[in-house]
Each structure stands twice: as structure tokens, then as C-alpha cells.
Image 1 (cartoon, rainbow, N blue to C red):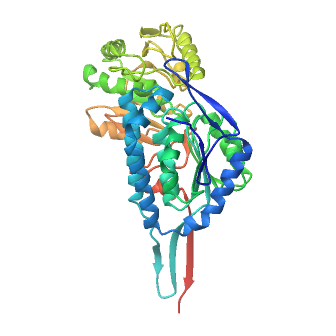
Image 2 (cartoon, rainbow, N blue to C red):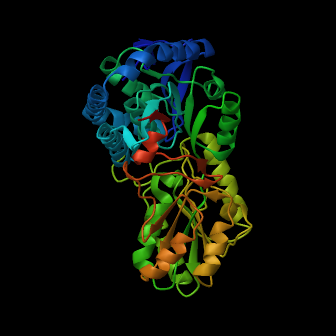
Image 3 (cartoon, rainbow, N blue to C red):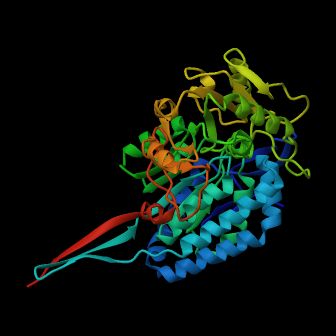
Length: 468
């Protein structure tokens, strides 16, 4: 596939420069794509601004039809998009296919929503109604771990609400997004959706651009702070879905063998490169040894390799920077705990790290306190649920967490006191387009998904009319 061009004002165009994209499984160049300049970003924003009035005034039923057509186009290219996604991101092909299909499903979900006028009061003295109006041009900035599904957290909601969009994928995973731009360009009026790629040099310009009224960003907490600071001058809206250090609290009444598989899946999906992955497991002392042993067995059995190879369950880390960061965290953890699976250097090409389990480690270490965002899980011994809850809540992060217990009343009590945006019970990291999602503390600002997520792409507009 290719060439991979930018989408600006309804046209596929070359960039003022080019960008080399690396396959993380081979460390070889996968493709060269267009790279936008600051001037091309300005062109895209100008096109989106011109397109906004007509798109705003397009009946919502017509906007719905466009979203459904976009979903059909994405799903219709499932095989091509999935292979491309695997090659640029690294995840196994089956997971990539699930992501492409999921992105299409999120478009279909948002096409099912409405933004009705609501009557707040209709009395003898006044009639008060509220409406949801679009904001204008929206900047959507997407990270490299789930390029397509996280795009679908933002773009369909923004478009359904009547906004126009500037979409920027991550510099290391732009290809599948540029491919979607090619697929959908004729389904939208020119300028309604613009897609640019950069070398991590245009995010600040998007955030600060005077003609962009909202920025929806998913990425690291440190970058999220910069987005909020850049948006402050114009007081533009921001939605920030940021880092997490999700804790799983595993109580004494769990079967170690049955629970281990679920904990492992929650920690190591996408090689741990998931904002809501289990990043630290707090396990009751009575089942600690048994659960650690089961996790080690699962880690040793994982099939690590190129995502296009049949049987691969874990691919490489997506980029060299993250690969080296995680290796450093593992090296440090070896001096602070006991590595019982993984933790050995990979021999050969590719940014591969075997799933690593570290026991006999505690809070106050880098692996436990920071977000590793890779295939390494610390397992911390606890006395009881209250002990674990206090440790979990001590983190500056608050994206998600989970409670594991057969006593559902106890689990609900602990979940109700966990300081996170989402808490799961006896499962972890389950998302759906109709379930609102957002973080607490340093894990974010605002909400994505569901009706609440749609509302974040609108301005509340209240009309208060006197009667009588």
C-alpha cells in the first residue's frame, strides 16, 4: 500500500518533508510517508475552519450516514489495515484485526447517538431549553499503542457533534491512519476531516493554534501537562487521557491458578503498552507464592515474535525509546526484587522483551511507583484489602484499577473507595463505546466515550425565555 499522503481540504497531498516508519519487529524501514510542515498544518486548520459552518448546519441524520459510511470503509479494508497496523505497531495480527474492527464499531456506536434539545423548565413564567452546539475545529492527537481504536474514541464523536477535525497520529505509527484518510476522503465534504503526520514537532502548534477550539489528547502525563499549558492562552477545551499505574488488588479468597490467567492478560496485552493495563498487582500473603508461580508459568509459555507470524501472542515494544526505558526499569528492579520469569536480554533484531514477573518488591521502587508501559509486572505482598487500597490510592495516578474477590460486597466496598476513574471487579481493562471513560488525578481531565464523551465535543447553550 501507499503512497501514504496527507489529507488536507479533501485532497491527498505530499508533505513538505517525508517520514521514515520503522517496523519494530525487524528494526527495518517499513515505508516512507508524507510529513506535514507547520505551513501545511495551517492550511489544514484553515480548511477545517472554512468547512465548519456548512458541516455544523448539516442535519445530524446526514452526519450519521457519513459516520456509518466511514465505518463500512474501515471494516471493508480490514485485512489490509490489520497487516499494516501489525507492521508499524508490532501487535499480533489477530489483535490488529480486533482493533480495526473495533474502530469501525466505535464509529457505528456514535452514529447511533443524538443531541436532542432538552426542556429544563416550561412554567407559567418561563421556558428554558438547553442545546448542545459544536465547538468548531477540533485537534485530535493519538498515541502509538492503539492508533486506530483511540482515533475512534475522538473522531466520530467530534464529527457527529458537528465539529471539523485535524487528526494527528503518532510519528511512529502514522501509516494505518493515513490509509484510513485515503479510504474516507470522498465520504466527507472537503475540510471536514484533515489528517496530517509529523515527527513529533506539530503537537504544540496544534495545541496553541488560535483557530482550534478543542484538543483531545491521549498520551503521557508529562505531554498532557504541556497540552493543557498550551491551551490555556485561548482557554480552549481539552480532554486529556493520560498515564496510568493501575493496581489489581487480589484478595485471599481467589483461586491462584484461575485468577493468574486473568491477571496476566490484564497486564500483558499489547506487551503491556496499554494505559489501563495492570501495572502493579497487590496479592494477599496467603496466596502470594502460588499466584507468583502461576504468573511465571504463563510468562514462560508466551510466544514472543513478529506479529505477522502465526502463533505469536506478544509482539515487540513499539519503538526504541520505550524499549530502552523498559530495559532500564527491569535492570533496576533486579536489585530491588526477585525476577522469576523473563528479565533476560533479547538476542537479535527487534524491540522484544519477554514478559517479566518481579516478586519480593514493594512500594517506593521505580517499577511499582512509575508507569512502566511494557511487559514487566511487579507483584507485591499485602496483609489485607485495606492495606492494598491504601497503597493503591497513594499513587499520583488514577486511571483504572481492579478488585479480585469472591465476596462481592467486600469488593464493591473497596471499589467504591479506590481513587480512579474506573474500577473493575473480577476483570480488568474492559472498555466499550457506551461506557464513559476518564482518569482521576494525574491520569487525565474530562471524559471519553458514551453520551458523556460526546457532550465534551459540544458547548452547552441555554435559552431562557420569559412567558406571560
